Length: 164
Ligand SMILES: Cc1cc2nc3c(=O)[nH]c(=O)nc-3n(C[C@H](O)[C@H](O)[C@H](O)COP(=O)(O)O)c2cc1C
Image (tube, rainbow, N blue to C red; front, side):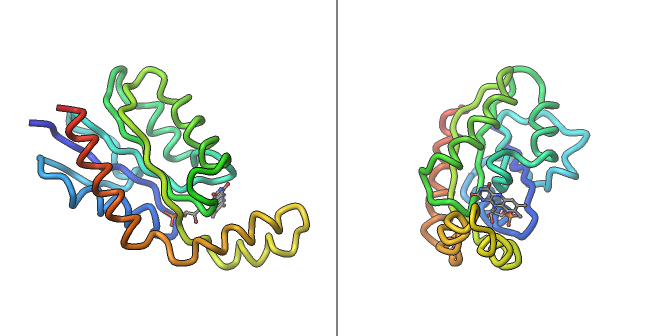
């Protein structure tokens, strides 16, 4: 039986929602922990690592966690982001995450949009060089939505199947 950990970093709750949907979806022994609490860990066959995309990359807290995992550990990466799904910027963040995990076995990755803090949107709308991104990110107001959480659940089940 595969034992699963869902570890996540979430500043405003979007990634946490996705993490919980993944945790609820899998029918195996499992734990869910904010990354700050995932210190001395039991052995897990599969670790989901979730983070908000920040400055096109992986926030330091999650980067440090990924770097500290034992060699050969099976992981599944997931992220929420303000940019459109499938765009170049979120892809860059997954590439950074995969770059940290070269000694690990990355079974897959999942991304969906997450509402961007209004204060950040307002600040970026005022800067000509960031206005276009801020306008795009406003479209993530309702995310993650029910469809995102269903996709996340399906992804989690697929990853557990792969880890068996
Ligand atoms: C400081 C900061 C930087 C961000 N940078 C990006 C970015 O580069 N690309 C992007 O798509 N979203 C970016 N976002 C938006 C977050 O990734 C998005 O809102 C995410 O869903 C937040 O997740 P959380 O609620 O789990 O913290 C940024 C948000 C913050 C606060």
